[in-house]
Length: 379
Ligand code: AMP
Image (cartoon, rainbow, N blue to C red):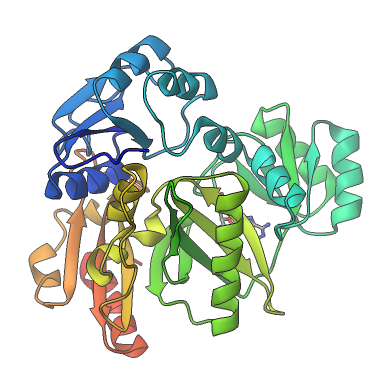
């Protein structure tokens, strides 16, 4: 298989911040970039050569887009299987449509993980009251009810303490199929962002520790404070998952670490991930360059950290509620790096940017996280 080289064109499905950061890497390395989404002046479009505007379910437009580029990759996975197949009939799409089909649907994803022997939270598919009652009796209290289809950042999910509560919540979800799963009182949440090339090469970043606010990622700390054994296990599970569905590109595997030091896979994302943004300022190769290298059939870069500790703090739209944030004050620390995504409308809960910090100790990085939050008014 030939490599796609600088001067050739990368097609990105989606036009948000993940596409923007991929486009920045691609531009740095001399590639052309076309982005496909319904939005104008998007975070990715501001960096791309061509902003192709069409609906995500327009297969003809997607084929037209594909014919203008050399390879297609994605920055979000909610592209329909049919459109992805239509693109594949024109140009290579990496990861392949089958990977999207699995990961864009919670039930398919969990079933795939379970059937392939990966550790997942106990779950049952539910479609009616009787199934909810049976599932609840089998899984124990409390549970989490989630939509079977697409969901992210805690959208479409509720914690439930009884079968009746689950039945009520199911009615409110307005869906015909959901998942009931055991609520895990985990010790911490970690993730592994890993890359797999066309030749089967596999390069994971070190596992990181993620904390959330209102179900949205708040802070990532690298490396995660876990044993070396657990870190290796997390990397090996991630390798196994990428191999099991022949995933080319970047995959994020989110895990729960239980109090008895067991790993459970919570969710997969077949693309760079918010919990990998720290790699931009802390690693020899960041997650976006790895995505580019993988989809272009180039050798993967080193994921080595160039600093002992690093962290990322998300900046949501809420930060603008009292006016322009104090970015100049924030940047008084020379080891603090600001990334903004070029979004015009700072709505509450919307991811507008992030801050990366590096340091020589966990304490130093923790202090910088605190400082960032204080200056930006993040509670
Ligand atoms: P998800 O949309 O499935 O990634 O869930 C978003 C967040 O909800 C996770 O990062 C966890 O903090 C929490 N969560 C999801 N599923 C569970 C579970 N089974 N037990 C405990 N917390 C959960």
